[in-house]
Amino acid sequence: MAGGKWYLVAYDVRCPKRLRRVHREVVSEGQGLQQSVYLVRASHRSLRDLLARVEAQMDTAVDDLRAYPVPHPAQLWCGGAMVSATAERNEPIAVVVDWWDGVTERIRRWRASA
Figure 1: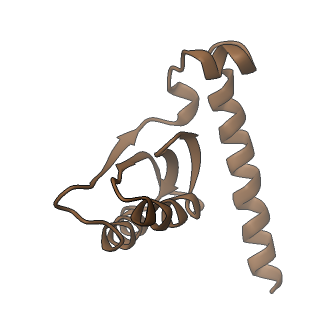
Figure 2 (figure 1 turned 60 degrees about the vertical axis):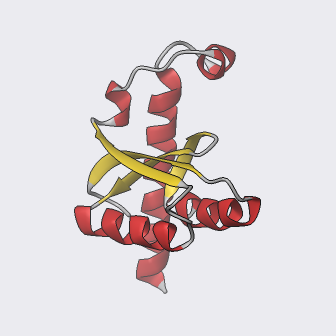
C-alpha cells in the first residue's frame, strides 16, 4: 500500500483461532510495532478494505479492532524497553519507516516487472 496516510491498527481477539486469522490479515498490510499493534500506510479506501477483511474474521461481540490516524512515523515518540534495547529514543520508528519504504518500493518494482 504505497502512498496514503499512516494508521496504527490494533486488535484484541480472545479466541486463538480467530487471533491467528486476524494476525494474518493485518501483518500482510502493516509493520508490527508490538503484539497486536501495527503501523499501516494506506489510502482511506484500502484501510476500509483491510478493516472489513479483519472484522470478517472476528467475533465483534467480544473482540476489538481499532485504527487511529497518526502523523508520519518519524514524528511519533517511542519509549520503553523496545526502544532502549535497540537504539536511541525515536530512532526505531525512523528505521521502521526506512525499512517499510524500501519494502513497498521493492514490491512496486516486482509487480511492475511481472
